[in-house]
Length: 261
Image (cartoon, rainbow, N blue to C red; front, side):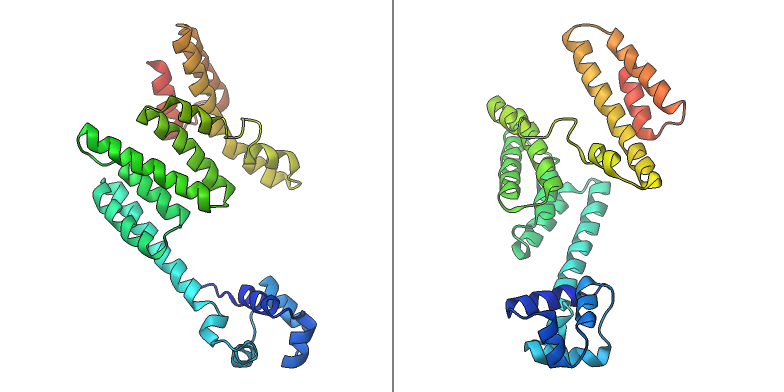
């Protein structure tokens, strides 16, 4: 269990407009200790916790972040159950699971995303499926309203574009698609350029190869279909041969099989 003392100390200190030196002087310790704890490089001795808690007029549980720790554990448990249900195709159960969870965490981006994903996998009449899709769109709009995480926002934009397209709103689909970054502005591209450690750079480059293969396949297939030019699909096979030389994951095998049709 990861304690949150450092984050709590910093928050409590700043909320009272105190410096590390002022806190250290009142407690009777060095300011370097306060600095170390706030950086997360260590924890106070257990005998120091009541003193710190009393100084900031909070409970020891609040000081070590028990509410946040318990909340994180509950979210982990919910996410694990969602994963288990998804593997079994229990999407109806997941919808109920996420709806209940969102009563406690109403703007949690991951829960909103998981509810959306589960809704879009529910069976039903065409009318019902369209209603599920409509709710999914509203959930993604909520994510964009409250979530600051760039990766989650990117996923929401992409999902919204696809959802609007399937809902029949072509203009909205295009609007959200154009808000996404282009192929050049990706995490992998930026990190490969700036990472100094060769091993990290190599691992980041390798992690990008499969997604790049999928992207090339996706776009070459689009050209093949729009220009009625099957030779572009042959290029996909050649690219896969050059990149992987027979050492293919199930994901790449799937791309190869699709290109071969």
